[in-house]
Length: 172
Image (cartoon, rainbow, N blue to C red; front, side, top):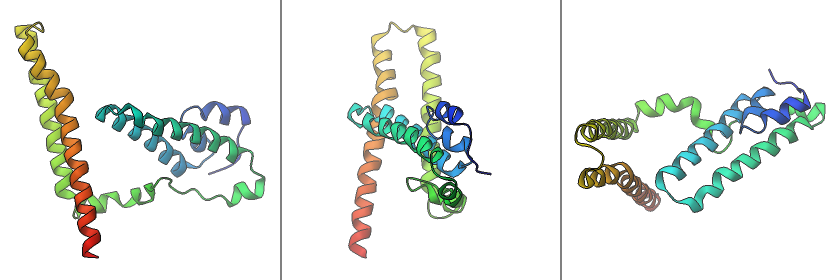
């Protein structure tokens, strides 16, 4: 149920991306902003491209002003505002159907790769505890697998996605 709330609490909650919108009852907008912010922070930190840090900062600032602007709307405009997903998250309700369909193999492969990396991390931690972290070869291998291999795989996935998009465009 959406309704105008306290100006003070909207201001306070708007410091967390999406929370101000959720406080006013716009759950889809708030979820979109939270997911967008958190996913972009995660992607920027994983791929280590600091120049892309401007994207989560922009989402953060947008979310802050968005919540406060919604709060200052007149009653008629506020009541007419629909709670829709932002940033292309409008298909999030049907994600289960997509995961069962043609994307099932991709999701399975991603889950397997994540599981393998988790197991490697646990194995390396155990090995380093037994041998010691001062072994330069073991620590070099550990940091390479932990830092560089995921970036490499993400780069391959981005290139593959671009090729698939170009191929799909030519077929149309």
